Image: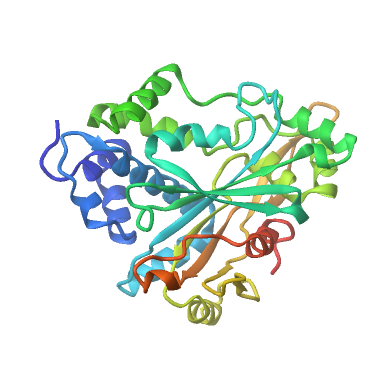
Length: 342
């Protein structure tokens, strides 16, 4: 049963403890209704918010520049409005126990109230991007930008390497979690105890589900698609999380002056209403299998942290933000994990 504080705080406290929960409440903008929801049931909106908070915290651990920025933001008495998280998938059948493409992710987003919000061809990358927004609080709860890589658009050698890399994929969704997702889908809420059981499983979906790739396969993938090479080491982890800020240009200059490794240019959508930039990708050590059966470490590009400014849609007279994305912007931002350079 609820303790009378809020079910969001209670649920997160049971999963990650009071100190980490308090830190996230101070750091992130949370809609007051979501933050104060008394329970005893945990709504799908609260569950969606909780999952995003767990994934945001995970990115701060993996991306040092994001942690530095978060600490700086708190020191200035500001908060971060998490706009969206980006996840990469492979549109391929037969990846061990993992569903093909974005279904590996959307199967958990649908019960959380997420619906398709836009489709974005990423032709230069031979990928397709799709945004998903939470129906109850589309502007306040972070969207998911899911991209699918299409192996059939690459060479046979590349396709064979993709199959070898992904063949060992495990399905992180347990039978118990699947049952809870079905219940959430039909009732739109769960108890606190059920939420505490479900959320760590949902967070584990955003990890690499296959074993370490062979170094030879990684090199084959990297030659044709840095994006697939990234997937081979990072899997379905957040490629980036994003802070929605009032003025991304001003923010970029501020962070450059502080010595943060900022992308050189700010990307602007065709509409002019969506502007994005980012820190350079984190450098991480990953292990690879060698032909003699050993494991070797190699430095590769990990995840990164992004900034976005969204202006209102003109026809809504400033009452509704433009929650769309832009194919050109996305492809430019994706380069952050291709070379680690702006």
